[in-house]
Length: 125
Image (tube, rainbow, N blue to C red; front, side, top):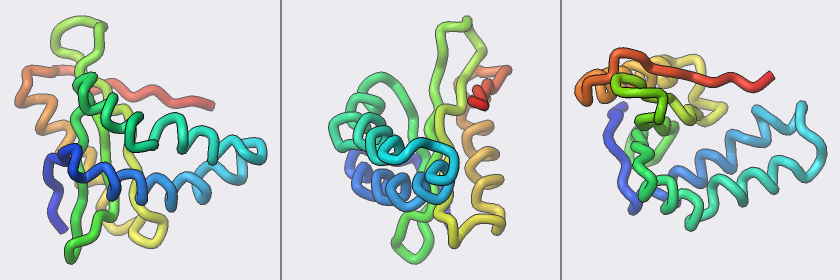
């Protein structure tokens, strides 16, 4: 398993992970059709390209040449030294094997290297 910075060339892999993860995570709690709507809104090729261009930094987990998870993070206007973890998803069959932890640690290291002292995470209930 390697965790590496993703580029726009990785958009198909990021989208594929989201398409396979979101129905499992959110299908049971969102109204019918909402998962597909949100995937189109947040994970279309154009939407992901805009996120890259807006300064979101993506990290991708690769194993044997395939993406198994990703995270997105970046600075927020809360002030200097604050970075936000925007997204973190691991394929359902690859969860509970340390991949999420590896992504969190990689985000933490990347944020710290840019001078962040605070890593923020918003949780919707």
